[in-house]
Amino acid sequence: MKLLSHIKKIPAGTMIVPLFVSAILNTFCPWILRIGSYSQALLSDDGLRVAMFLTLLFTGTQIKMSDIPEALKRGGSHVLFKYLAGAGIYICIFHFFGYGGIFGVCSLAILCALTNNNGSLYMGLMESYGDHADLVARPMFNLNSGPMLSLLTIGVSGGGVSYQEYITILLPLCIGITLANLDDEIRRATKSGNALVLPIMGFILGANIDLAKIIEGGFGGIFLFVIVMLVTGPVAFIVDRFLLKRPGYGGIATVSVAGNTIAVPAMIAQIAPDFAPYVKLATIQISCAAVLSAILCPFIVQWFAKKFGCPKYEENFGIKLSGITG
Image (cartoon, rainbow, N blue to C red):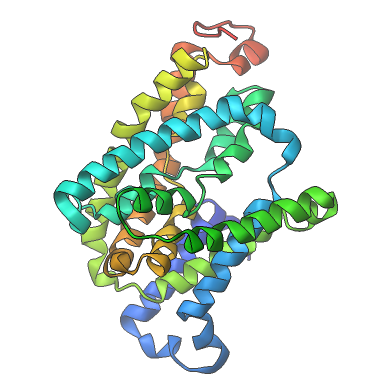
């Protein structure tokens, strides 16, 4: 039975499916997850920390130093301006509404969703619509694929995150970058590292989720997706059109919530414990928003590509659409 191929058809399925499997077990028969020894140790906070370390390490191994100059212009611009917009909105919401957030969406979920994006979805869309420079920009999105920028925002907004905690996050990332750039074989060997770790992390996170709150989280997830689109969508389009002098499809492709983001609330709570009571709710809301992103974003990017142009339409169909300026 081709179980994995079916799971991959579900948006962010390799993380969401294990998450909901363990959440179902935790809701209806939690004793199964607490049988002691190795199994229970894996589902503990220490097990989660190990999974976090491996995720950051494997992310670092996929960053090439030679790609950085070419990636900075396009990818760096999108990462920077999306972060500034998202962090600004989060700081305002947190200042006025606190940890509870707005429209039923907790501040932790808003922070994680607005300061992260789906680099894999971007890559897939650029294969269909973009050019080589768009593809080379992909490594830059590793910078906001995890807790680093979210933690930076908490520190700026007075969250009390010490510099040692940033070192904790950066250390495995830097180790991965260094090793892979010293030996390209390491990069190839660890290419699928996160693909193996993310299902485990999803299962660990799900083991602490009560599905009785899924309805509340589901509605919040819809609002979270809307917030991401309304806040970062216009910013990404303006940056692509007027700063980078591009058609706009590349910017819109960065407007998404990644499956990887599901793990970020738990990572943040390990370092900023004041957010711990909101981890479960934020995880569910981000899961819902990630699914909506994976389903709807490709159609949104397709509309912008047709409306304003993209390299692949001219290449594949001989039709030069408006908006191709460089």
